[in-house]
Amino acid sequence: MGKNIEDWSARYALVKPLIGMVHRLQYRNIIVKGRENIPKEKPIIFAPNHQNALMDPLAIVFTTPLQPVFLARADIFKSRFIASILRFFKILPVYRIRDGKDQLNKNNETFETCIRILKKNKPLCLFPEAAHVGMKSMLPHKKAIPRLAFLAGSQTNYTIDLQVVPVGIFYSHYSRFRSDLIVHYGPPVAIKPYFEMIETEGETKATFALRDKIFTEVSKCCVHVPDKENYPIYEMAFSLLKPFIENEKFKQNKPADAVLTYQYLIVKLEEVLRSDPDLLNKLKDYTNEINLLKNNSGLTERTLQKGKITFTQAIGFIVLQLLLTPFSLTGLLVNGWLFYMVFYGITRKVNDPQFVSSFSFGGSLILLPVWIIIQFFIYFAFGVNLALSAFFAVASVPLGIVAWESGQAWLHFLNRLKYNRNSKSGNIPFKHLLETRKKFIKTLKPFIV
Image (cartoon, rainbow, N blue to C red; front, side, top):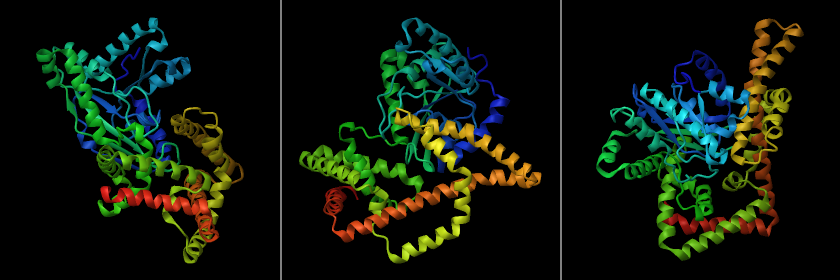
């Protein structure tokens, strides 16, 4: 198992940019911070937070020039075909008690491979939570990274200069096409001081100390809400107060500032909720009421923040969309079926919401290249020359994105018209929704901004 899996692979290097192009299409913005923190010519263990199933390892793969080896749960290796694909992409299995006690011994081979990888100054990646969670909050970290680090230490007479690189992964939306992805590589945690702690305080204390240190450093790079009991209040604050923070504290509204904005809000909210139980209860009531009214209204948070659309804005939008119609309509006609299959057909029966984007990405990875090739042969069969056939086939991709963006813009436009109608009709639940949102903002804003 894992024979030479750590060695640089030419086939991997060839396939990576091809898959990377499809991965890039998934996001409007991919922002990488702290890439200079990744040590060179040293053994590395990447330690990212885990929120979005298979998209998380891809976030690491496509934001670093390295070829890291990943550890993943063993049950996904059951199919020989799948197992061969996973090993091609440098993924090793880790067996858990639920896989059967008789399987646990197989971990010895995996760990031996990991030690060999680290001894050769090659990168590993382990998710310290050992499970993904669909919220802006981390699960408690397991002890896998400290144990592996100390095993590497014991087999090198504690001379290995191992570095654990904390990584924060943030998605503006977990499954929506053309969302934002931010990957933040934090300053590495050197393991040698913990080797010294083993000698002075014992391995158990050193294990817990390193585990807690990694948790702290990862939390600095990602969005982590410690208070899971009151998580809905944090979510509501993220939605309603984020614009004020960006405009008044950061003086700008950039995707790159999203993590900083959320982190700032979390710190402030923790102080407020911890010190004032009455305020906490009031915010709970507001949050529950807003969520209920918003679900019943069918309006998005984006629409509620934008508010009414003026006549001038409406005319400007329609004119712009009419100008884009030749492109968006072509993109829809050519790629509409593909969008439906990838984002609705394939993911319809996915039970775990955190796997939706993984399955849609997998569908895109298979169907998009095939569809481009089919288009090429269709154009060529109808007498279009070779160069133009290739151009038209490839051009269908940006046209598809234009169609998607145009469709989303029309949905938002119709939502804003609905906002106007509700405002004029005196819709009581709608009016109550706006009032409750204002109360939430008015209650918290003095403590936050």
